[in-house]
Image (tube, rainbow, N blue to C red; front, side):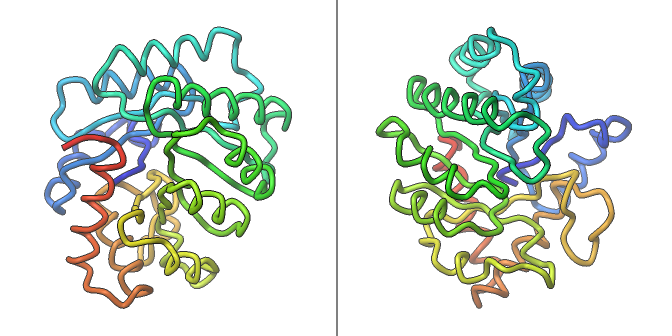
Length: 251
């Protein structure tokens, strides 16, 4: 599972059981994604000493309005001081909910793109209803920055810039929804740059839609994506696992 939120309060009462169910389903490696500095520290605590679990450090666009001047220093320290931290993020832009001022989102996004280049880590990008702005930021980012458009649901401009930059694109349980409209973009992703994720506890795939999501259900995400690509699920599971390990630089 290339993107989940194991520190979310939805897992407070049964986190160990969630991890056990993932292992029983064959999901033995996962990356838990941070939303702010406090969450990054909690994610590091969870990943530390736990085989097959890694984490990120970063500030989500929803939290950009509450970020302090020292947050980037804290993210830099987490990213450079701990092997469990394998990416910067999640960062990006969300102009759908606008939980933070757009200028604050943009400033923090650009800062995290620069930080990812500085510390030689990939960046995990959230993009919602900000296609042109995401594309512009990707065009202007430091050379050599690697990243992923996570939970991709559309946006031709951002997709084109990501492809030009050699980025990865990740798909979630939304690919199993009847409303999914990015199947053409999914088929356009090079096989060696395709990732799958749960984004749990959110976006549970069909037939679990509407319930709490968890890493074990990435198996259903693989099945949905495999149907759209007309490839065997086992082949896709192997391919996307290898891609995730390469992207995050882990084994």
